[in-house]
Length: 245
Image (cartoon, rainbow, N blue to C red; front, side, top):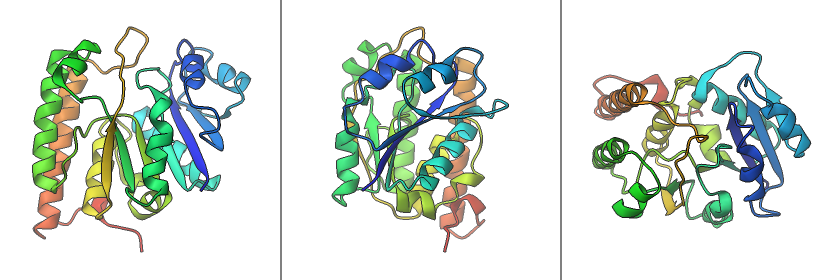
């Protein structure tokens, strides 16, 4: 199976090389970086590292960046796509394990969970308010969708080609809530979602949304969950939850 890593990048010049260095050799057939109109040398560095680079002419946002990532990965013939943040926050050494769960037909979607224990999550530098919000949102999302994930809000993810070709991720937000929407779509479509623990690091160069945007993200995630419940009970159909024929 052809495995492609996609890196949604924005001003990642300081951390990109370390991220690439930690990806296990031979894990991927191709690594694609989409540069979301960075103001630093991210794109040039990526080319120097031998990555396939697709630069945006304007900033499209985190969700918009992912849309380009997945389009390009599918065009390149990917059977498995792994999203790795180039800010060195998630340890990419677990990528082969994530791919294996899809390759062995155990899962369709695999997440890297930052929360194996409360102590470990907080020791990594995760702010306490983000930890508490993550626990609350994850509990509600698991309850409503019937899943049992350790967390719903990880940025390290692996998707099968079938998943990407079935759900309408192109209709999702261009902002951070894209990730939450994608998982609700995958759960609604009946895809098998699993997770494994991943080492996570919080430091000044790692990207992180501030408190205000975190609140917006949390409320938007709950809004998507409400749309899911209305759709499933046939009260109000949701176009995001339709599947491609």
